[in-house]
Each structure stands twice: as structure tokens, then as C-alpha cells.
Image (cartoon, rainbow, N blue to C red; front, side):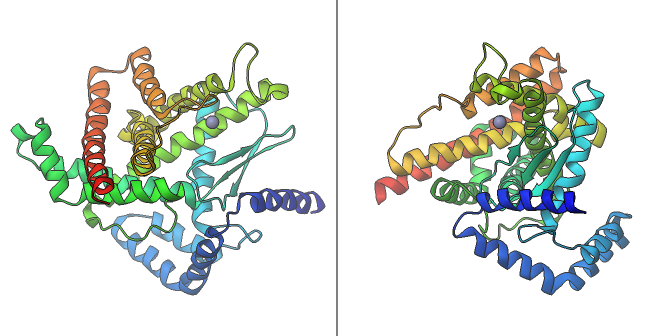
Length: 356
Ligand SMILES: [Zn+2]
């Protein structure tokens, strides 16, 4: 019991470091909303259950039973990331690179999309939260709607950049992407962005896409823990290597795990690494947007690979892994769609900046 208390104090100490002024209020509101609406949320889960199997039932029980552990816990983060982390660790073990120490999950109250990894000599703690799932969910909406809209074009127009561009502008995807990119450029977060409408029939494909991004993001962090176990005195950086190479190595393990996760969970976006590619592209577009807004060029970090490098690494990974032609084609097609959206966002941004 005392060890548990000690552990919890440690978790809460780090959670307090992750809190940012301004977002605490939003997260507090989310917590209150959950408490007030617990019964009706559980009812909605049960209704889901009547439609599509047993998940709703389990979720309803979880909603009713949830007890926050400490001030910075979150029901939603726990539901999303705790089971996903267990699956990611199991896949690491299957592919022969298991973490030696246990990895605990804790909610992150930080608004940004990247989780925080806290390695130690006894057990590791992975902090992930609404900052991550908000980012993935909003961009998941944009991209899953875009894929759907292109899919319903007449076949001969599906390879035409101008037909795709017109369609994406008309259905509102480009406007949504622009709003997201501006928001992220200004605040480095999509937390509390508000509603983006999406037809409910697209929910299933959005969930798969978001899940594929989250699987990769967690796998990258687990890779950091594994590296840290091997090279504890240099923060996981192997001898004769550097931080940038470490990040690329963690991505590479992340791709392998994401691919295995996709095969296991029947998630084509994870299996084909479309999730990580679109995640990187969304970050890239946000950087470009910030650069247009501020007039400051994008400066490549000395310690971290650029999003461009990370996208190229995905494509190289698929090549090296001898992924089938159709897989490589699909990931390039997804990237093309993202880039068509991105180029239209840039046109709008340039116009906005000139007009202002
Ligand atoms: Zn990293």
C-alpha cells in the first residue's frame, strides 16, 4: 500500500510538470462533464451494444466504475491508451524486442500531441492523454472524410489532381484542415478545438485511422524505453550515435510494431503504415502553416529528424521490409491525398496573409 502511494505521488509530481496554464481549465471541464453525464454516457454505450456486439456493455460498466486516480487522471485516456499500450508491449515481445521492465500508463495533462516517456531503473511510466487523442482524432476526421469523398468520385476522376482538389474544397475538408493547421500553428495543440462535423457512416474508418496513429505513437515511446534499458547512461543513445538517430530508430521499431498491430487487429491503416505517414504529414502541414503565418522559415532541429525525414523513413521501411506493391501504392496514394489537401491549405494561408 505504501509503495503504491509512493508511486502515485511520483506520477502526480510529473503530471503537475506537464500541466500548462490555460488547458487545465478545459481538462477540468471535461472531467466535470464526465461526472455529470456518467449515467447518460453509460446508457449511450449500452445502446451501441444493441447495435454492434459486446463492446458497449463493457464500456458502460467501465464508465460507471471509473474512479480517478489523483487530480490529473482521465477516464478517456485510460480507456484509449491503457489497453493499447498492453497490446503494443505484447507485440514488441512477439517480434523479439520486449521491454525488460514493466511500463505503467498515466494520463498526461499536457496539451501537445506527443506523449511523455519517463524511463527509470525499476519501471517506466508513459504519459499520454487528450493532447494526443485530440490531435489524432481531428486529423483522422479530415483524412477519413477526404478518402471517402475521393472514393465516391467517378473512377476516371480518382487519379485527377484537379478533380480531387475541387471535391475536397467543396466538401469542406480543406477548410477544416486550414482551421486545424492555424490552431495548431498558434497553440501547438488541438485540445478544445471544438466540433468538426463528420457523417456518422465514416466513424468506423476514422476510428481505425486514429487508432493506427495512436498505435504508432505509443510504439515509438515504448521503443525509447527499450533503448533506455540498453543504454541507461546516455538516455538510450547507443555509442557513436546521436539523439536524431535514436529518434529514427524509435520510429523504425514503431513502424514494425504498428505493422504487426495492424495485422493482428485487422487495421489496414496500421498494417500499411498510413497512420504514421498521415500523423507526420499533419505535423508537417502545421509547421508550414506556422511558417507562412509568422514569415519565419522552418528550421530543422539538430536533435530531431524533420517530419519530411520521418515520412521518407516510412517509405524506405516499407521498401526494405519488401512490402507488397499494393501496400506501397496505398501509402503513396494516402500521402498524395494529404499533400493535395496541404497544398490547398497553403494557397489559402498565403492569400490570408497577403490579404491581411
Ligand atoms: Zn522520440
